[in-house]
Image (cartoon, rainbow, N blue to C red; front, top):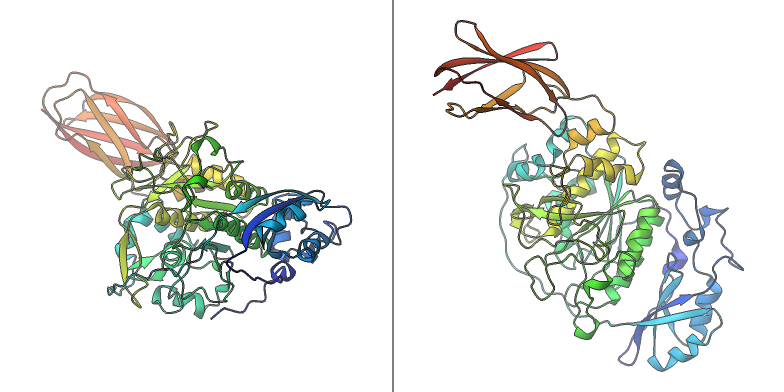
Length: 545
């Protein structure tokens, strides 16, 4: 079943026929000029972009340019006239995916408007379906998903009233098995939040009978199953796009991915999640080399960079090659693209997952950008109607961040896509020293919320942790718990008679919520530690041995 939608779709782009047989192969061809003689004009963008897409550009002050224009119809017709089938145009790269006999390529290259071509290896197999079933637990809370949400502040985001309302999220994946059956997605249908689907691979109009992977990914962005799984952007709208043939790994899927990203742009998506990545292929001679991972070379990475310049936040998984010595443990394409959020994995103890793809890119940029829980991540078990299961992979950490992006952007609608990305990175747990395992670390909604201009959230009474307690050392730590307070605090350490042994001032900010105090030589005993902040006083007792 394919959902109907009133969203404007660039229909002619997808109107070309598709006819493949054993003799034909798929190629990508690139064209010359784009503006001259093109019936479409950037002065009339309503011809080829939805109003939502146009408004996204206006809001972020992103002018239209020639890359937004559709490929010239005359070029596409010319390709068809020499005997090739146009599968999909690629407007951002001014090209097209075509299907034809290999011996026809010299004729196509001789056309005056064709610059070059490249073969795309492709093969379609039936995707395997794994068989298992578990039952979920029903109640009105985050259930088993609490930890993965709270580590990035999604629970706080929800308590502030942001659940992704008003945002459109496109999910590019290999299939969305049983999304129309599992209870974690029932709210999307009931509230008309699932705006449409598209199967770029087989064009059969049904993404709900394909692979399970995209359904599990979707559950970590918009799933709502109280008591088991509640995800960050369950109130957003969604468009599901199948670009991947999971049973094979061929470069045609990179081209399909580019088509899906252009579609996401044209319908006005704010956020795109892609838990897909490319390093090696079924034909080994076509494997990528880390030497080309500069964010500007592979077809998918170039397209991801273009999407960022169109004002969308693209969230990509870093890949699961961290333990792959033959690959080197690096990230995958399009995770090397600039101006997107590449997401790695940690476990619930905030430790790096050894399988998570690592940077840097070949041009020296830190990757991943952020991390979320990808080890033991709770997802919908789509082989049941209401169950959940634990899965491993950056496929499941990326959508947690996508949900956070949607809610944070809802809270700060005046931000551009790059400002959203920068604020979340600045809120990271590893912001002072980003590295190529966890990047800027775990983002946090409240820290990002304050960075973006909201008033600091100071809860009273503040919960203080003072440790070690008891202590026989010469250093004491004061840490604020469950609050992100910004401001000056005065502290005082006194004995039980009230005699002050030490006093001073501390500055708490978004990064430094813990401070150390060097203790003078004091007699063993019990002491009061008083902290004054925001007009309030807080008292704790410590024992010195």
